[in-house]
Image (cartoon, rainbow, N blue to C red; front, top):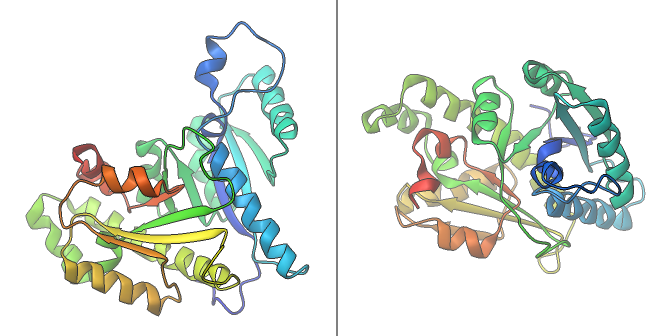
Length: 276
């Protein structure tokens, strides 16, 4: 991991085109003119741009900024053109476009040294995590509820468990592969948390365009406390913390509405959020 004092950015985040634009609506529409309809990632992009704008306002030479790359798999030439035109139409700041085959996704993420791959597809997130790529769920934002604040939610269950505790999850039905994936997720989570913590410190406690949260859904209060302590050691003081100790997650998520839900793959391994 790069030392946070020497990191010069940008902080690279990758999205997929079918999250940024609602292609399902396009398929059922007879309108061939105009921009593609907005997708689930639209509020995320706008929130990221707000953070970047505020950082540059504070320091015109700021280098620790978000850069978003857009990956499109198996697209026709017509859709490729529509994607580029729609990005321009909405004034979205996309650093690079990559049009590739489905099996080239992981290599594209690795070659661009992506710090975080976001997707609404749980299987894509799990595959990326399993191959050592930092990945998290892009939480479903159906409306433009908040465009001026980016919310990042970390899993206290992953961060709060020690390596020995993670090994002990085998007794709860986790496979060895799943446990190794959680360990890899914690390592990549640390790198991202360090950078986000450094970015968060650029702003005051109030009216910040960047909000960080931790949610412990499965572990005890001790696990939550350990997660908070670990995050502070990584240089990140979270704005909000929730310890549910097995209670349903849905009510909290519905209120917090994070853009990024980084739970290390728990959603895929235990169907944690589906049960909530």
